Image: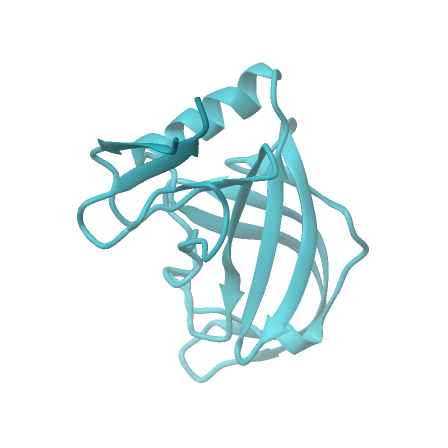
Length: 169
């Protein structure tokens, strides 16, 4: 017998998922669009070594997990990260993601080569990535936690979130 449980939650624009019992988030951490401070970070210009720390709000003393995968997709930097379980700040961050309070990513990097933009900002053409943070308000508005396509537990960001789990009695 299969039992299906559904629960509606008030969380939109944020998706988290559990796959193989692990707490994961994924989405674009950065794109090549102009950010809120007028800068552009070219995804193909970045270098990094995995795993990278996943931080809460760029606070270096608040690691909450690890970035396990980074892929340049088109003009974006697609990531998958795992939040640890049983550590206060990570548990708090997971609850905030679940509640819709944290729904974005932000990158922490060192510029290696940049060019001025006509608008006054900088275009970072070469840079080293040091950390990715889960944040409330990202500099790059497109750097959002995205919907999962797999996993036993999903929050769907299409207006009516749903948690669905199948259990055998």
